[in-house]
Length: 75
Image (cartoon, rainbow, N blue to C red):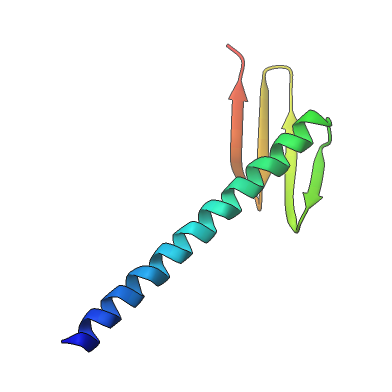
């Protein structure tokens, strides 16, 4: 019984840790995106996190690894 309980607790801890690491990675991507926008750079890499900024008269999009992480459009 103790072995089953220990396995369940350790499994949950591992899952929680993975979720926390993903949240930290996403926060770092957003920080780099914000810096790129503030400094008006089309590309920026910091701490091995790279983002690309695409601007037009009506929209702003930030990509990381080919995926849109921020998209803003004027109406």
